[in-house]
Length: 221
Image (cartoon, rainbow, N blue to C red; front, side, top):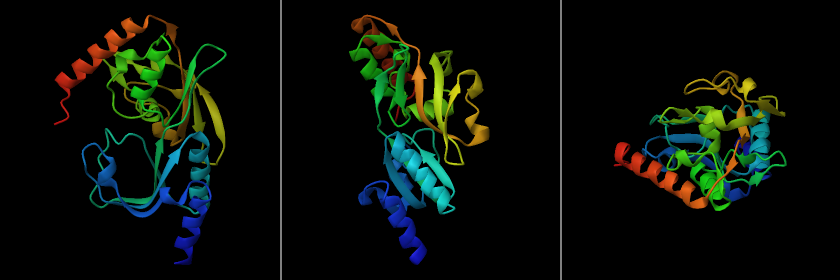
């Protein structure tokens, strides 16, 4: 009981108490509505919280599973041992180099809306893609022959020893449906994307076409 209290207090020192849960039902967070209990669940919001929670989990010897938008995920009725971290929200910003940096917890659709509002093109073809930036990087999301890695310049990663690094496009070892993360088990904290100036209406037209195609070919029901 003392260990459980220590773990709870440790995570609560990083995020607010209402975002730390013991025995959390995973079916409420997956798009397919499946999944048993996670031993521990913490909801992080932003890059620093994610890094700090991962560090705390290592301190307590907890195996960690990262959850983004909950799509492309099947969780067993037996649940998940250790800690599940749901990484949501975070910042999006234009970098001095002209790229756009988005935190891993930002949804792809949220990032695309942010870019269209600022007349920036590059990702509008991914409109309607469920999930987060981190998930898209992890699995190298693709659509109609395009890989999202083609738009990525660098990725921020949290390593298992608690450090953070920046990996170039080449260092990410992107391939179809995969990246180096499948081997290293590092965690995405942010990604930078190549963007270009474009007309907002043109971007919206492409985004609407993508949404319509996904609704037709991937009906949620």
